[in-house]
Amino acid sequence: EPEVTQTPSHQVTQMGQEVILRCVPISNHLYFYWYRQILGQKVEFLVSFYNNEISEKSEIFDDQFSVERPDGSNFTLKIRSTKLEDSAMYFCASSRTGQDGGTQYFGPGTRLLVL
Amino acid sequence: AQKITQTQPGMFVQEKEAVTLDCTYDTSDQSYGLFWYKQPSSGEMIFLIYQGSYDEQNATEGRYSLNFQKARKSANLVISASQLGDSAMYFCAMREGHQGGKLIFGQGTELSVKP
Image (cartoon, rainbow over all chains, first blue to last red):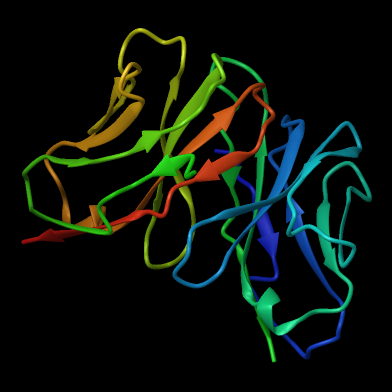
């Protein structure tokens, strides 16, 4: 069964460093998303991506964040200069339109720790 | 105002019994989707069940069913014949508008299944 994959599973970085989180969405999906979950809290939407451009972004997704689909399979989230409060689990998700109502399937997450 | 409300931070259920996890939502859209996800202690987000706002029948997926009461704006998850492996965090989520839209999550309910 196709699934969303994410790398790395864990990342530790120093404050101010750049990180790139990588995702491979399900191959026939057209919508891609990033969410984050701070420890013990609910899942928060960051950004959605369709047709090679951002379709929606949240207030959290400021100038420090960017997304890219560099080729036909990968989808990346870059944080330019990490802050302590960026420590969270980051989930990539993908979906298609159809009878499943656009169900979003999530990857296993990347746990980011900023020191 | 909260878009998705899960009022039960924690629930206990005896193995083999049924349990209902509550979810209420708030939207003025006519077209929306309601989803439940399971998050075990390992951290991944597992899709369980989807209900479309125009669906007249309650959704079912194996031991999971969604008790959809549109007038009350509730979308409760019912798990029948609970198993020890059902112990996890459960999140209700809503997608407003088109199928590529973002998910808005509730705070979650932590379910513990007792042997």
